[in-house]
Amino acid sequence: MTSGEAAPELDPVIHAQARLRVMVTLSTLCEGDEIAFPSLKDLLGMTAGNLSVHLTKLEEAGYVRITKTHRGRTPVTYVSMTTRGRLALEDYTKAIRSLLDSAGGAP
Image (tube, rainbow, N blue to C red; front, side):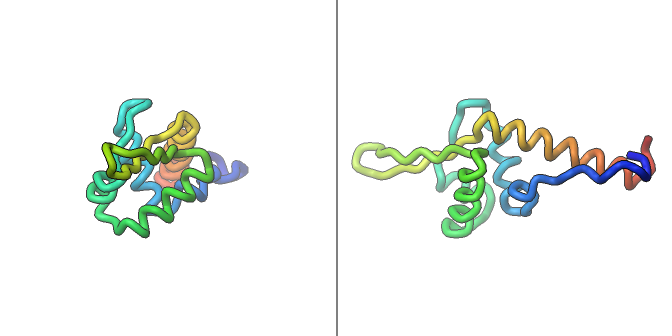
């Protein structure tokens, strides 16, 4: 990035620390796979309420899919990353790398 170039835009939906952690964790799943809400909550060490708020933001952006179903009589919520979410995280990662490279003096 030269002095005349603008800094890359960082997606504000992903940029929040908790949502970035959610996205990175979900990106480790194979495309089309999903994780149960309690498992994601435990992996991230977040409260159910906090995770729920961040998942709602990501779902509104089209980055994650929330599926509510039942296993027998027990309600179960699954979370998966959408194709749009994978592309958004990829773009975000490229923007961060570009920003860091420019700060380090790399061409």
